[in-house]
Image (cartoon, rainbow over all chains, first blue to last red; front, top):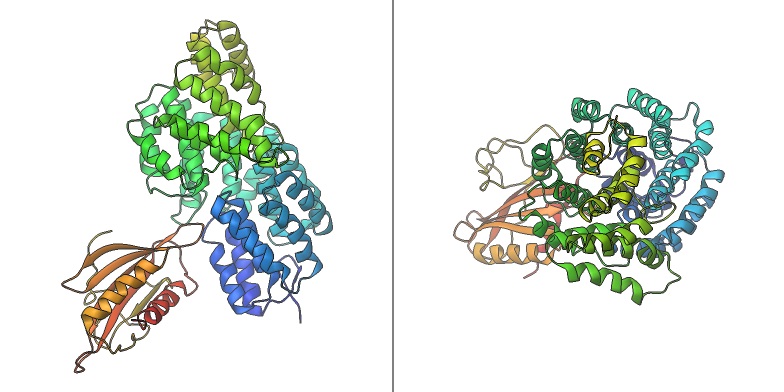
Length: 439
Length: 133
């Protein structure tokens, strides 16, 4: 007898216990809380031919964007091909093969088709949503979920879709609807860390720093649990609020106590650390020897091949630690690879000018930093991250224009920011330095 | 990590995220899940095997050691998420059996409510690894 998951889809090869473990793993993945790998691993021990358990495990490994984990995904795909699979699993494997080769845009397309056939496949939607994030595909962050949502009326887990929809709406600049969807998701499931983070993004993008700070802190019991694997990112969001409020010392304390409080080696946590420390550095904060630890930790993931968004954040740490050649080596590696491969293209088209701009900035060659950063900053459908994460590029660019006394560029860029966040303390400080009269 | 745990005063939490192997009566304040095997080797040799077993596992990180007391601690790091579990181990002479030994070990998760049996499996794996000279 074929069992079903909570959404009613077939779980080929699963025993009753394995099906329960599968739902537990999905729930942990959806909330970003608790180890999601362990239930899938246990399910596979119980039911070795349970394809969806291995599919789910493989997607989580793929989402890590870490080279060793990506190699593991390739092995898992091989194992899946030796298993008796149903059509749902076969559809996943088609997408997973592309993800395992870090052809992320093609993987997203495969998951688009998968979602059309299986709109209530939670793993398919969550994987697709994360792939859309990895490819900075704001439209699909919203629309992948919008396509599936009508099929979820009365289906368990619908609140997770609202959380994902909230993030997609936020990345599309539809802040009012994003906040409403995110708050509805939290009303239905207070521990949905992704939904919480989507609302934090809205407040960040609207410059509601004090409100964002209070929202994040008030809800910390729901996202800062020790086993929450989005907690570092949410601490990062809190630190951004404090930076916006001019509280550099608090942001630095959060870096020490939370962002790097436990010196994790998870790549996504290192991204947050690099991005925060770089901002603190731009604002004149004393980063001390923090870059050294961060750069050392990055060496195990930054390979110039797997995911350029990570590599650029590694390069920021290398530059901060005075290891400029390690930063340029990442670009060289991309040039050694095939230009047909998507990650090499992203590195050449986006990663390289960003690293080049950061290097110029670090050397005090501010005019030289402007052109590459201007060229690379308008990222869409490639390279990855959220608007909030990529904002570090614009900060650096404006600093380069101000320090390089290119007031025309500085003023233009500051006006761009003021149009979106006219009350932002950071933007107003930029405006003053650029000689602009803000409201 | 703070110092070695005291097996004599060990108390286990209600949450199902720990495992304890110990001879009868060795942990008067904590109910073991079972006893470790008795090995046909002297305690010092079993301690050396334990050090080797920890070193052989890439996701087991050796912490504090006490060569005189035949005690060690290690951290087991989970795949991908890198959640950490702490393990305390002490090698013991097997009562009344010269040249034989056993151990007590306590493995517990730092985070999460249920470990889905991971700590027990780790101690079982350790028991097996100590069989090999």
